[in-house]
Length: 324
Length: 269
Image (cartoon, rainbow over all chains, first blue to last red; front, side):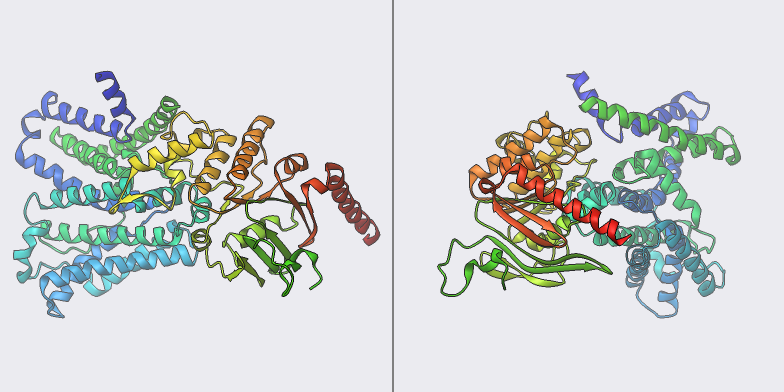
């Protein structure tokens, strides 16, 4: 019975990254010299905050990767959206909540433009979103004059819901991951996203609208980028032109891949991406507690990504062999 | 209007059983390339029609027009005697026309049952009803004699014959009344081919599905088809019941086409 349950668990795409996360928690929490501080409330909050915003944009990247695309610009939407919110509130006197919604909607429109470039103008997404990344960054630096802003005073009350409260970000991340885990595994949208990435011609011959799927997933990713940016602005209590950028995007893609999403499309997991990001955050935090500086951490990160990829290739092969 | 193929419903003439599908004067060009010039084709209820012709004769183009994937430049399509415009694959499917492409339109990464219900998923509210799809897929495959170990298996692991069987079963059980099969026997061994031929024969025995099948193996065509049409230079040039023709006759016509092409090449320099 245990054997069968165990085998069923191991067949889950998220199994390998889940095991890695558990091992890391055990190591840093009980074995290593960091064990006195790792499982404290403060540190858990740190890890959660280092996971949440990246996991949120990773959700979008997973769906995009699965349908055969990528969005390099999402980190710049992250940087832009709090500025949009700021100007909506201070210059246009729009109520805070409406300003947040509008800023997030602007994210969706950026996704629409990315989708247009890729689907209608047939620009490969790598190039299209690289271009839009620079455009968004330039736009943000222009409207902000590259100056950081503090949050408008009238936004502080609502800010608790959006990241100022210590646990707010991880709650947002868990809710978003849970929703899109269901969307991805249990709805037509998820199935058609897999079909689009797995066999694009076949999917369109079956009558699936490839354009709709790709547009939707680009819009989702940019929207989540805007959400993550606003959450981070409230958490850090500042609107910073140097926030976001390519780094969060690469973390999100790395988390997706570590979690079990294929870069080539056709398969992936939203839950795995959250776990993948958790693994990266635990590594970063744990090494920090051990007194290892962030410089060699990059080596660990690189090794972790490659090791995860290798493990994925072999586990997928095992999984396929096991089910035949 | 001298094409004998389409003259069965002239006013005053005795109306035969209405054809389930008719296409009249269909033409289609892609830029400078003319794929179809003037195609007239009909399909009777419960009939299995074999469509043969040289590579590049326009067989697949014709099929893609009949299934709504692309519109014809000219001509009209009649379903049960009524003119229709097939706006899309979905639209054609809602009218009961379904196609099994040469590439089968299966997604390797998805399970058999998800493939069988691709883009016509059974849902409960917004969520997929996997349990029901799994159960029905299993039943349908068993009824059609397509043997698989489990409907949870990813399609990537199946043999060519199994994949074809799944694609055909998918169409039949989506209530397709007109089934278009694009080279279902291509690249298939004798044993697998026999499985597909058996499948088509079973469909014929059911009587409620009409089939157009593109094939290259004339022996197999004569084995399952009621009637054979030859597509040459964008037109149907030959239309006979299988009973009235033979393997030799079909082969001879194609040989003639090769000879003509060869001669044209030599005399043209």
